[in-house]
Length: 114
Length: 114
Image 1: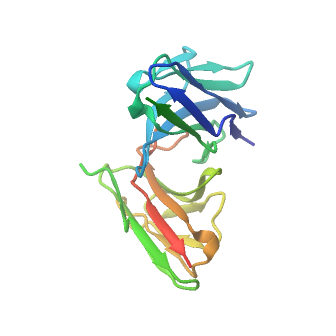
Image 2: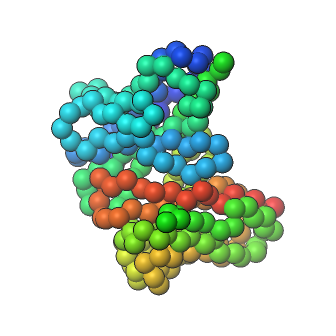
């Protein structure tokens, strides 16, 4: 069975500082990994995804994530955050097992302070 | 192109009442799903559909029914509302089968069951 663990429920950070949101997954099969962002009172939208190939994936709004198979991790990073990055971030995993199910983590609330 | 739309945005129900949450997409996506979002639990899959006339259960289907008579619409029915169904409900769609696909989310419906 697949699962996703987001290691921090809340991450406060000052504006222009770097940030890393941590995500670990477990799966016995090949995985596809996603990061989604949810701004206040909105639905989720895709930030980036890893399907195969280069382990460093670049997404929208200056975010990137690195797939580490040996550590079973897919941490999200941004070198310099902005107030507008305040949102909830969800890591998700889809496995190559057939069906149509994506498993979401519990979410990490990023709070950027001035 | 409106994407994924959901109505209503907010609803208050009394225990035992029934209601239908509406979801529609205008992207001709084959796959649609319903999630509920609860604090600290991320998104959990309720039901999904791989095409018109085909639906299946997700992680937490009890107390909910779905149908898919057209490609565009995927309503979620609460048969007899319970306080445990207080949550934020998201509908999502994606163009093709498979867990590589990006999901497109609606803005959500906030449901309060008293």
